[in-house]
Image 1 (spheres, rainbow, N blue to C red):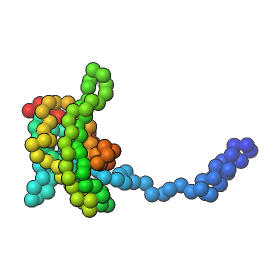
Image 2: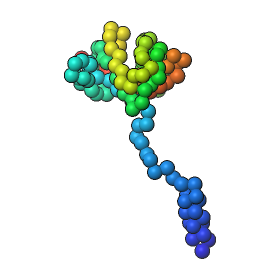
Image 3: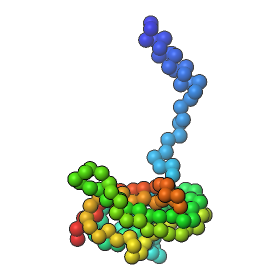
Image 4: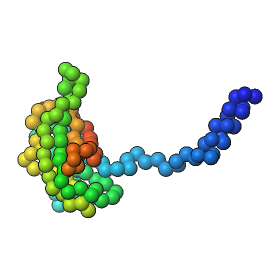
Length: 137
């Protein structure tokens, strides 16, 4: 009887306070990488690439509201089991952008490893991030 009472109390609690029935896998900006971006869109989307230049993509369902941003790479250090700062590049974007690509001579993954890639706002706060594995050619 005690278990039945507890069950009904739990059911009443859930019905009073509700459970959010909307569940989203990604409700904010998504960061991913590709080989390049051109007239036909993204080429070679993956999370594993060989060393060299890559394009960082950020896609969102709403305007990001950003103007000064940075792309930062942190590289995984197998000896310590932690990520360590690798490089950072500054860009200017338009606040109404929902879909942005970052490419150029800066975005060069010179050495193999596992990297965290961040989009940072002007205050250094993470907007979104992703992981990529870089292997030798």
